Amino acid sequence: MSVSPQDVERIARLAGLDVDRETLTTLTQQIGRILEYVSRLEAVPGGAEMPDLLHRPPLRLDEVRAADLAAPPGSNAPAFRDGLFLVPRLLGVGGDAGPESEA
Image 1 (spheres, rainbow, N blue to C red):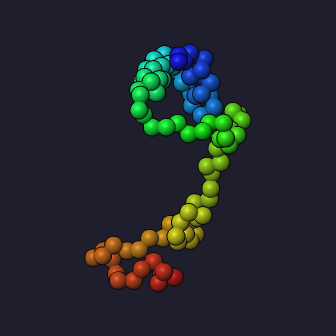
Image 2 (image 1 turned 180 degrees about the horizontal axis):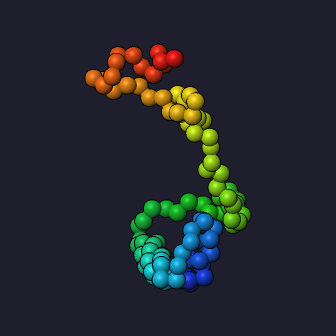
Image 3 (image 1 turned 135 degrees about the horizontal axis):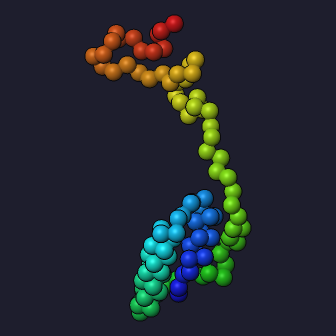
């Protein structure tokens, strides 16, 4: 099985990657070698049985979607107050009181 630069370009676009011409050439060669290796592995007798591919779930559509990676910083913080992340004091640094005891 061979892969064309257009195939790699399409995959990169779907993954949201910006690939320049030089990198596209390198990726095309690398992916081609990977596919060649996998096809040789499939030809080895006595390998693992392939799953029934006729009953696999449907694939999602190939479409470019924006990644929803933006989240307010406080939503992932265990303690967040007045725009600051609150963390426990390090042992031996400052007083014994943690950030919760500060007013």
